[in-house]
Image (cartoon, rainbow, N blue to C red; front, top):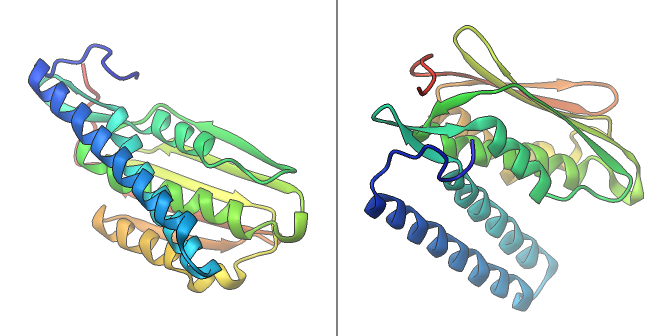
Length: 204
């Protein structure tokens, strides 16, 4: 699903969404400016992470369309673009297995934050000191909802086990009334979030 394709929204609503995206991009740019001027590695890292999270929310709006009188998000396209934008470290491959999943629009931004944290944490923490490896991202639809999984063959949880990113992942899982499972894959870690959908009906 691409932006504007078969979009039933009236022109004024599409224009308003476009302005919101521009505003989010402006905020992200300002956060990036603060990151470059921040003193201390911890402050720079925090600003950069905030910028990525704003970018994830902005990206969710690009995959929003209105069909059949309702708004939807193309979850597979959203996760694919997030994985592309969060560039992996050198020597780390990314495998995407994404089934077509269309979700209610209200689930789009929380899903974007969850996927961003899961993929970003794998890139940031799983392969220190130039290690090579693989990150596998899957999105699967089940009889009652969908499951997003991100696994790596890196060094394990380590410091990321108590990081703020995991807190965000837990909060977004609760917001979507989902279930978060973390598995010590030996090697690496796999996070899986199963989310019930409010409706199984696909947009017309």
